[in-house]
Image (tube, rainbow, N blue to C red; front, side, top):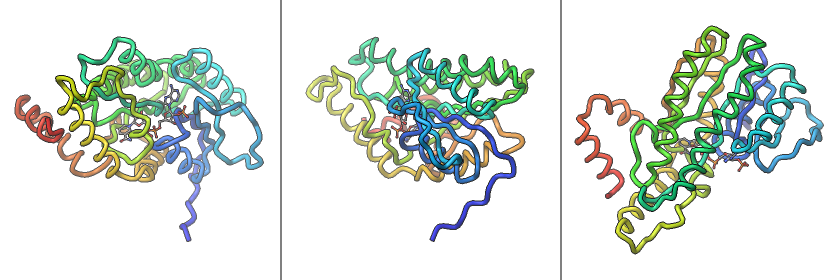
Length: 281
Ligand SMILES: NC(=O)c1ccc[n+]([C@@H]2O[C@H](COP(=O)([O-])OP(=O)(O)OC[C@H]3O[C@@H](n4cnc5c(N)ncnc54)[C@H](OP(=O)(O)O)[C@@H]3O)[C@@H](O)[C@H]2O)c1
């Protein structure tokens, strides 16, 4: 039998984007168990108040690519709960393929979700958060944004850009009592692998063919053997309930965190060789 979870001393109102699957779902469920009021988003959810349990996870529709959908979801939470204590910007996906074979539209679509999606949610929520005078924005980046992953470079670029945005946002929001944290996970076993988009011009027989296929196979294997999303959920609970959350947390498998911690000390060409060897290219 599972040990009952101790309730948090202070219940918070939390919005998590992309809570239908993987990390977002595990985090939403863990936060509900702690007694928080949790709104999770999915593009497939509907505004239905059909939950007989007021403490259950409340799923609401949001497409982070769509201003109207984002504004509507934020307004819904404010109407229903009166405040938003924490926003977890988690919705995102991966893209695989050579940079040369990626169209501008494919790259823009990825940035629209992974980067501008976070911007959209922040723009919609910040007027409320500033007015209430408190709030915590948590952005889910990736260790793949700290180093560039070959044949998934646009994903890495979107997460590097998000790290930079998070740092700037944190400084801009200090006077308003709003804190910003980014979490950079290594590989986790989620729907991410199945939901990864392959660029349309991926060409197994082309000039990048074999190297691209080998790199993607390594990524997929690392994700399948990745950490359990419940582990990240437990860390997120601690971050949300902490009085002084840090600016950045790197989480996941020990060896991946160790490698990333060595990055600032490795000469660039050595790091490049190491990554090329890890991804078998
Ligand atoms: N798994 C890993 O190894 C790993 C590692 C580092 C970082 N991450 C990051 O963790 C986050 C969650 O990924 P995951 O691993 O949990 O993947 P997942 O199982 O595929 O879940 C992705 C979630 O994002 C939502 N989503 C995707 N596009 C959306 C859009 N346009 N608008 C709203 N929601 C959207 C999906 O919801 P609907 O489809 O229901 O709308 C789903 O709930 C992502 O930002 C990912 O980059 C994952």
